Image 1 (cartoon, rainbow, N blue to C red):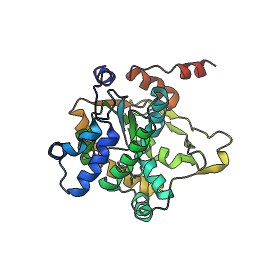
Image 2 (image 1 turned 180 degrees about the vertical axis):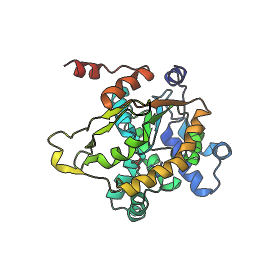
Image 3 (image 1 turned 120 degrees about the vertical axis):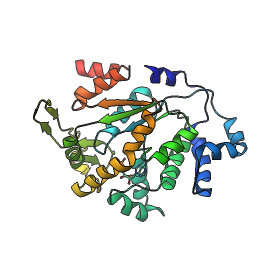
Image 4 (image 1 turned 90 degrees about the horizontal axis):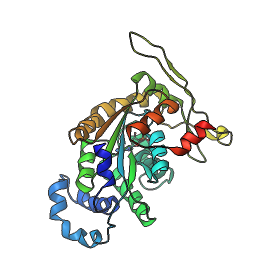
Length: 291
Ligand code: AMP
């Protein structure tokens, strides 16, 4: 697959952490930031940092898809398989909220209404996360929840080369139910789902079944629901996805980076199909399936 071979032969690049740090300075000093011209104009300031860059890097992938589609689930599985960090900007926002830092109350209001946080705040959080990872020797990433606007996509494209964008798609009837059924372990952060989705075949369309994803016994008594997973807020998040994030699909489609992936059902059907689409193999999964 062309996109995959591109990522395997990726040339030396500035790491995303250093370029993002630079970006924070760039966008905070300019309200009309243009990644092309602004990055070039300010290059000398970053040269010393770029000289320290490693000569190769790991995959840099992005997951796109509506709220509830399962970006976190599949990004996390691929992250384990490929040994690259799964970075969810939603998780970064929730961590910031939970820290009761200076941004907490402002973020809480935005997130609980299903709205998008400003590009500046998101890029600041993402940049800090990438820098922390770089300090620990991380390389590459699978982004989940970023970019969510064309401006974010332009900024990302201006600072690093994304190899592949996986656009997860699921029948609309299932999205709301999956968000409402989502449960999170307040202790380990594990994601589970109590929804049992059973869409009957109709008018020539096949049926679809998605089994619940129950928590292990140690998490069962510690489950919480995200405050933005109420019916009203999920509908608002779906509207915002259509208006703000759908155009990001076109952005990557026109650059030949978009892999469209229709989820056929739950994890047992979807994971092997996704691996095939990506030309990957999961030996552990085969072993556990065979056991
Ligand atoms: P998620 O967990 O991806 O559904 O994100 C939860 C919330 O965090 C979103 O509804 C937004 O308020 C905020 N958020 C996460 N990522 C972004 C982003 N890239 N841009 C703006 N807001 C974001």
